[in-house]
Length: 221
Image 1 (cartoon, rainbow, N blue to C red):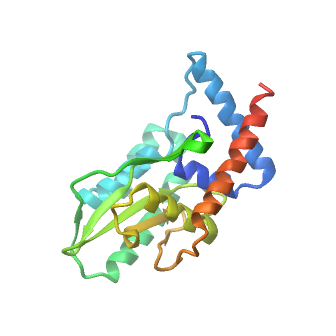
Image 2: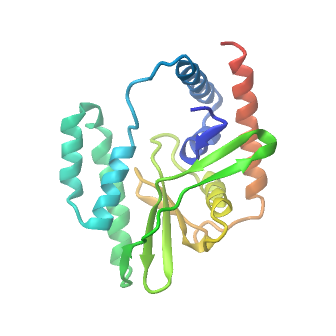
Image 3: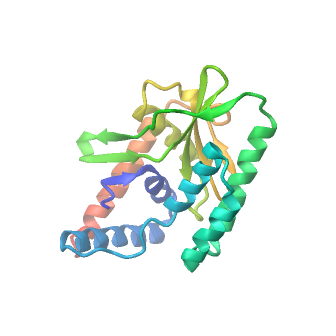
């Protein structure tokens, strides 16, 4: 899909990439957009989606995540290297959180998704597939997954990612949001990465930068 209508996960990766790798990502994005406009479909599908569905099923319904991962790998050998690493990172994070919390954790009944619009840039950020939990009697945890192998989620880009989540869901308590770097089993929250007040400006500058680069590269195709 176009970088001008991309998922937050993809944008956080793009923001942090070095120049040569960013150009490669944007060129791939442009080619994919052209294939779709011509009626072609690129194979491969969503690599991380099945894993995240299984991770959520494990948390919400107590299924056997390790067995689910084995089944996914049997269905597609391309998952053999990364899926076990994703499962390990996720379980390390989840078990560590449960170890230090006595509060009751339950599924939250309503799904959350949003599109954060930047009308002056003719762009939007898609925020979907969140893991939403009720914690205790009043609190929630709203967890957005970051799957990228490299670069890892830094404090800088985790912070502006949190800002995007808060801006997309203004009715939610900002303290409830987490961005989970799944592979490394670490989460960024406002508690451990407080806002500095420049997050919106920083996000916008990075978004504008990659859109401008994307539009320049598109003229070559």
